[in-house]
Amino acid sequence: MTQPLSLGQLSVWHDVRDLSPARRHEPNNVALWALSPDTDPEAARGAVAALAARHPSLRTRYDLDDPDAPRQLTPDEDFADELPTVETNETLEAVGTAGLHEPSAELPERIARDLAAEPFDLGRQHGWRARLLTRAGAPSHLLFVKHHIAADAWAQETLHREFRQELAVPGQLGPPPAGPAELAAEQYAPAGLRRQRAALAHWARTLERAPAATLPRPAEARGTVVQATLHSAAARTAARALAERGEVSVAGVVLAAYVRAVARRLETGSLLVQLMSANRFVGRWKEVVTSMNQWVPALVEQADGEFLALAKSAHWSSLAAVRHGMHDVTEVAALKAGTPGAPEPACAFNYVAVPDQPPANAPDTGRTAMEGEYTLTWEEPFTTIGPRCYARVLESGHELSVRLTVKDIGRDQCAALLGDLHDGLLSAARRL
Image 1 (tube, one colour):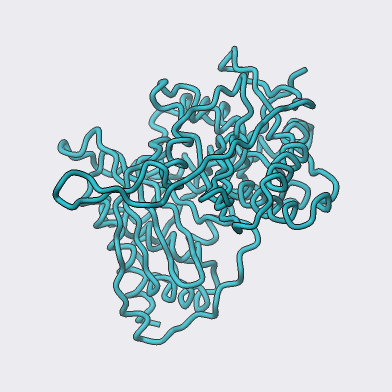
Image 2 (cartoon, one colour; image 1 turned 90 degrees about the vertical axis):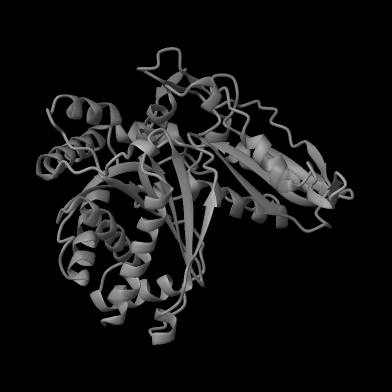
């Protein structure tokens, strides 16, 4: 028996359906969950099995024979997902005679990267795998790899929390939550179809008003994908101070700084932005383990105006967009195809939210904090799926990090955009 994909699953499928064999690992995500050395390996195996039994998404395979009409199969009742043990070795090995060293091939991070690089066959395999890593025979980590169609970032953190709960007190997780098949049934019921029509109308209105502005593709950068992450304690302080003064979200403030950095390069006062909507705003679906993320369009105006006015525009445009976060990507694609000259978003933005995060500290608006420097780290992108100018933002208790992945734009522009975002936050905060 099969059911339609939920709208989030369908979005993932449309992102990955045409990947070449060499790129089919790119929808995978990996997590290393640290374990105490006295963890009972059998208890860890039991906790992982309890998660798989509890969440239908972890027992689901897919009928993808018709790529235009994918279906999810009824979750398997009998499953044999194992938890193999892998011994690690964190020593350093000498290389050559020059005294150089490189990490052993058995480092946990390298094992994680290698396991994540193995694609899933979604028609035959469940979309996750796990390993119990040990050091000198004692558990050190649970390595968890999942395909994005099985779980998004929020769902992965839900699994992490439940794994630790089950490990501590087995059998106390409570009744199993609904799964993606139930979610799909609600989304295609009459009320869900009305929401889909409203979402499609939002897309149409936004595309009609948006300017056709895109970042240039320098000849020397064509075909390249680069990624850098900005880390800054000062940016976090500035963003929180601006959010408090403007009575808007921190996400809206950071989006405003990002929009301004991009818009200045395009000499425009309004910008079409893709926002990632978590779509977990209804209690019943908040903890469902599946992928619910979808891109939604927002038109952010006043990019060339006063910063707090821009932040308010970003805040309210974002709220209007995420109200329409659940949509059928096939209908959106048809809408774009039938709209001559439909603009493409100039950039994309994701302020990551995950469950059970400790509350952030109160903002420190002292001038010293506003004058901090930032660090920039360059990474090799694991995936090139997604928009060509994509900022992914995380706020911890002490810093703001912004990971920017750009295609056909180049390393210099990537660094400049991040620097402008950072400087925009700090300079706006100094004027408070």
